[in-house]
Structure formats: C-alpha cells, structure tokens
Length: 105
Length: 153
Image (cartoon, rainbow over the protein chains, first blue to last red):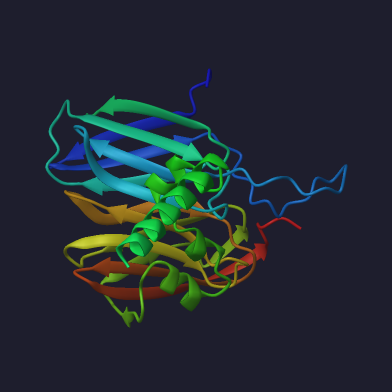
C-alpha cells in the first residue's frame, strides 16, 4: 500500500507502556447496502492485528466487521524502556496488510 | 492393515493439499487461526464455545468503560480493564448484534489486562467483556443504549 494506514504512538509511564493506534480502513461488515445500487457492499475488514514489543508478541487481536470504521486500538504492556521498538501490523480478509513501528517515548 | 492406514494417511494429506491449492484454506488464514466459527456465531454462548470457552464467572474485577447512551451505534468506544492476573485473552461482545463477537484480543508476555477500541452496535444491548485468565473465564457486562444502529441496513 502506498499510503500509510497506521498512526502509532507509544508512551511510557513507570515502565508500563501505553500504545495507541489508529488504522485507516473501511471495515465493511458485508451487511451494509449501497444506497445507489441497492446491492450489498462486500465485506472488507481487518481480521488480525498484532502488536510487538522489541520483536516479541504482546497482543494478537482478532477482529470482525463489528469494529468501527477507521479502527482505534489501545493496549498496555510492562517492562518498557524509552527507545524500545513497538511494531503494529494488520491484515484484512481481502489480503491487504500494512505495518508500522515506533519508539517508546 | 498397514497398507490401509498408509492409504488413509496419504489421502488425508492430499485432501489438505487440494484444499490449500483450491484456495479453500489459504495458508495465511490457517496460520493466523482466525476463529471463524466464533465470529459467525449468532449468540453469545455459541461465540464463546467457538473460542473454546464454556462457562464464565461474573467478576467484579473487570471494568468496562463505555458510554451509557451511544448516539451513534457505528462508533461505540469501549475500554476493558481488569486487575485479574495472568490474562490470556479479552473478548468483547455486543449482545444483540447479528454476530455478537466483535473482537478477541490475545495477550502475550508482558501485556497488561487492558484494551480499548471502538465497536459497532446494532441496537441497545449489553456490552460483555470476557476475560480468560489461568484457564478460567470471567465476564462483566454493561448496558449501552444505542440511538442509531451501526450495522448497516
């Protein structure tokens, strides 16, 4: 994907990092109808999102179409130091994917 | 007898290979193990069993932060926080959605019992959080009133 789809932030408070991420994605459930054509809009949603701290899995989220459009995700983990790498990646049901990384502040 | 078991084995293996090549089981989907049955379940108990959870105990150690009244069902911010230790997963359900399971978060390593996201809700119902920790499942619920549904149609 040419455009960046993930906005990622990780802040550290007393060794506990809070990661906040915003992903740009339509998150179609497959139930919504197109108002003009009356046809159903095909499902297109993120299925898995994984968050890593220094290369180690912290969270693996499994989503359905019931997560809002342009999803927001926040999670926390222990043992963070300033400058650590936090990586986030997603993949959807149509084979799309993206990833981004940031440093703990 | 031996030949028979051998044949069975090869047949099963080729069956999987055919399924993979036909795109029925894309390798990526198999690896990610996205729990399809849980997400397609039409009721909370069915979705729970799809995740391999039987019964849940109501727990006061789970806090669900969600609005009392959500004006727009398409964007309902939900935060789940728990003080239960050794949490392996947190799942968020919207009880009266067509498919109640909205999301399942597997927590690993140093992850804390905390997730926040935004979900879609079809109508007024309870948001249920199920926390799996140490082989047991705990749940908590919070009613959210939805003024405009957020699941299409």
